[in-house]
Image (tube, each protein chain N blue to C red):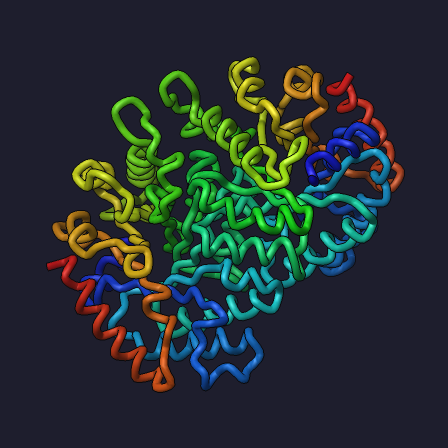
Length: 278
Length: 278
């Protein structure tokens, strides 16, 4: 079960999940003469090399590459592949969500072939039959999915915070993800479904903590978006049940001596985020 | 404003929105010897040729092509391009949804370049700041977005039907989309945001009708998924404010004489769906 393996790596290395969500203005000067797609791939290579041993996994935001059409997606493919070849777990941040027969096509597209990843992020709005088509891959190929529960943006309040009786929509969604996970055949430990849970606009952490019982988490919003170490620790300290994504905070505003800087940032972040487990 | 133009075409031709959501087993025998990606493109060409004049617009489900990686997306690109070159409005059924800075990348990827479409489908779960980055394109390039309100799958009940006070979540989402639309600078008629509204699991149509006031609709679920003409008519008869997607029902189970069959199906569907406006 992939969430258990991810947890093992988070304990061994650190809860740092390096986000390879590259933008044009993240690229170090030395690589800027290459064609844009090569810049992304070459910088990604350096990022993986510099952070290996300090990170538990990598997350790649497909939108950063989809923005550039086919050539961007060629870079996306190469980045996924180089991360996986180095033996790391890669999370494809695709946030897809569609009816069953369409979800099946997305599962095929992102759990095998050009865009094969280990774990996908998925959107829950369309309900269980939009999630269940991924299950076969999760069981047979040891894949996984992080489903959006509470996101880290301010707009997450618009619908996710709406009250359903005495709980928020996101609490209901998280508890439902927990039930889906436990219902999966061959379920063990943290299973194959986890949840995306941002803490920076989450309100009462005690309620959130109750809602995520038994789930492994992908936690966005640290750094640029303002999530605090102590709030994250409130969720994961006891069970070491989450990884924490840092994207811009790791890859942007990099200087000339970027290889050394990437290494030092990885060391620092691993130490900083490791506090959540202690 | 693109929703007004779409409405004009729906009145002039028919409310039929042809879904080019192709699967391997949709392809007519005559085209099956081509490489799969060519099969998709060539069949799409025939579909557009046969249905022109009977349909108001075309919808292309990206997952059907994303499933085949880069080559599938090459076909997706060509299909979007051939539909647009023929002067038709094309809806990219991508159902994306992500935080602001990422939404901006998706907007770039699907409102310009290789994958340029006229209207996108979007997911509302992450709230307003996950939708607003598309607005600049909508205003400046006369683009549009259909945001998921009530979907046509059974699982739509899991979260969309949850009660927020005296209304369902999907009613709240639809009313919010209406407000976002009206708040758009240069708003006129049906504006640039519409909603995806399935009627096959929608419960009380009167309540749904109240929630969609002022919105132009993309209605899925007719045919294979079981939405009825009279239920659709209940929503759009008065204002002619929607297009109705037919995908499998138009493109699958096609015989040897497929060009003639596509033409006849288009004539029949235009007549059948035209009843919703009468």
